[in-house]
Length: 336
Image (cartoon, rainbow, N blue to C red):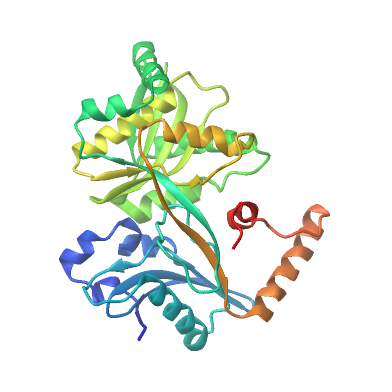
């Protein structure tokens, strides 16, 4: 039987809360809550999982914010739990569909009838010695890291206004290269303020000019490379050195693993994602493969939402088209 609470600590002990990753923590729930957004924790006798409920006009849908956390030894499969959660969300809370699961999450199964694809992330085990970790880094990455150090690239980290400003300026340049807009300085600032000690910005500079930046979420279990930004034509190796320094800092703080977040399985070598994934892969972390999924609970309301999205896109861009997510763009590779 599925229940829900407003705080994970209502179900989990203090030691179990420590065993959860950053997306189960109350400061993350605060960050993703707001006027039309709320977070609940759904649980059974075996698993607990954070769910963001979103209300927009006549629509009510949700995001599974993280993979289920097994807090007891009762026998229940992850699939059974996810099926029960979907039934509960529709029958008890009126949720109409489950949006695509996040790129950082490691779901090992999917609800019955969900649209799904394999998806993963490169994860480095920080328990290894620094020498071993560096030897696992691809030789081209090692070479440019050494070059950046020799050239005087400086890495700064923290949560200061200066770092937020500098990261935002690079974020604008990064999105401009794709013809899109930055999510804004206040969104970056809010991540830092809401997550507190569980979020940090790293910046790479040469001669005082910002070259590369990254925003990480972390706790003792894992550090997640959530967002990155680069100036146009950054100094060679600045981003590589930044990631290496972040990995070593996390290791020194006792963080167990480092996730580069997001790896399309069997990606097209001609796509824009290939270079990004090769950059992540070359830090030596194997792919931890899971499943990305989404599920319709109320076909009528889901179809109505899709139709409205098409009309909005027609008004904005002149194209009567849906917004294509990762699942829709990749599912042709994986016959269901």
